[in-house]
Amino acid sequence: MTFERFHLDPSLLLGVRDMGYREPTTIQERTIPAVMRGTDVIGVAQTGTGKTAAFLLPILDRLLKGPPQTTRALIISPTRELAIQIDEMRLGLSYHTPLSGCVVYGGADILPQVRALKGGADIVTATPGRLLDHMWHGLPKLEKIEVLVLDEADRLLDMGFLPDVEMILRRLPEQRQNLLFSATMPPEIERLAQRMMHDPETIAVGPRSQPVDTVRQELFQVEAQDKTRLLLRLLEGDDMRSVLVFSGTKAGADRVHADLQRKGIESCVIHSNRSQQERFTSLQTFRQGRARVLVATDVAARGLDIDGISHVINFDVPRAAEDYVHRIGRTARAGEKGHAITLATPCEARAVAAIERLIKARIPRNGALGGRPEAQQRGAGAPKRGRGRGGRPPGRRTRR
Ligand code: AMP
Figure 1 (cartoon, rainbow, N blue to C red):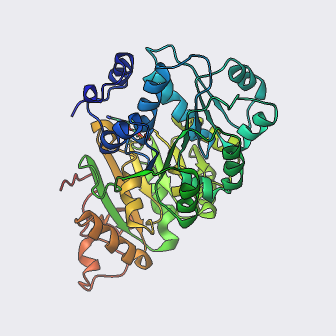
Figure 2 (tube, rainbow, N blue to C red):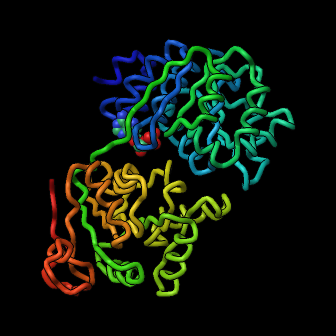
């Protein structure tokens, strides 16, 4: 299937071409026609599925057909980073159109945002708190809003934004199209959807359960107290250019970050207890290559589109098997080769087994650098912590 089949405005097809999209993703194939028909849509989809373009393209198409310089679409995002990403994609897709947009979020100078809102941006992307600040001052003008998007609704809930969202909803025209995207559908979000939507169509796209085959995976079996030492050894590798380290907890992420910094490794950290400004700075530092390592939790990393990651290291094995696929999908983007390394203690063996069931493959064990090799796990009577004996040398490529 091609994008031409949607009968989008030709200027948008130029944007699609510029973005390098050759064919629609599953969520796009199903969502774009529904939104173009004017239906309310609940999209159950994670980041990485192409959901942003799935709602942006039909919205932009609709905006092209109406009066310009009036705010007619509002997108609400839980975080500043996601709001910026959405607006960047809006800019890319609408590059060949006269449509304008602006992004408003907290922790930034309010005046440029006021100027952009006063100019009547066609499409406004906002975080809830800052949008409310503007709304108290009569901006943006909401009476002409035709389409509302709640993106990552489950994260809006997790971050305590639902009361703000409800307040915003009360100020919007009754007659509008509603689109709600969420990776999961907790009961609070189901209820919100029932209240705000009219006969919605639910489009669910399952999380990818198979890692891309250009990711080389390996697993080191270590004791908990040896993880930091092993991480430091791994980071000595010449090819460790841009490394995303996942920690299961916010405190753990801070600890790993502090340990790396103590050893002189440029790293930054991102999790939901850090302020918007800190998270933004960390992300920029990492994106611009001024830090080689970004330590993140799953929640903070969700929704972030970071290219060029050479390695993903799971400092902790993710508790939800799907998160493993999601985490390692951060590397090997756009057909590049990537490398995913998991550090697992004996206590994490069950989580590893669940991942292997999901991906229908065994993650190759690496016995080098203090990891326990294959033979020892099978109870071959080898000593408890072998140092490289019998293990594969690091760097061996595994393809399934
Ligand atoms: P999203 O799930 O919206 O965060 O999108 C994830 C990534 O997929 C972004 O980098 C998009 O630019 C990219 N993307 C979206 N749609 C397509 C497509 N049809 N073909 C290739 N890449 C896409």
